Amino acid sequence: MFNDVLSQQKRRVDMYATETYKKAKIVGSLSKAIQQGSKYGIWVAHITNASCEICINNNGKQFSLQSLLKEFPPHINCNCNIVTDKGVSIL
Image 1 (cartoon, one colour):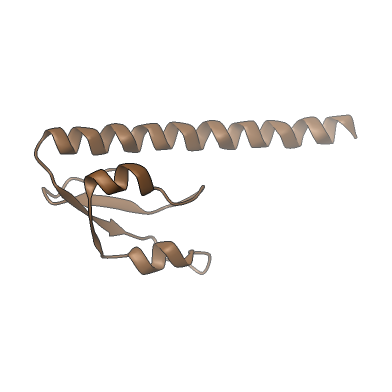
Image 2 (cartoon, helix red, strand yellow):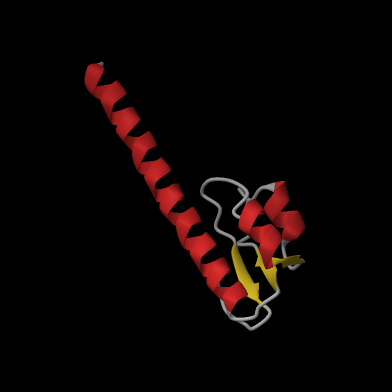
């Protein structure tokens, strides 16, 4: 039983580390795009049966890169991407 609990906690830590790394990469990429003169990005959802309503509703919509710094990604395990007005893919 102890090993099961330990294994579950390890999976949580691994997931948190992966998502924290992903968020840091996104913030860095968005910040770089802003410095290079990009103003907005288009939300590109990877739509599957498991896609959330937020991602489906935002697919194809334009957002300021400043707002995306705070709002993207909207949840863990998000497979969406942002393409800037200069055609640069954030992920």
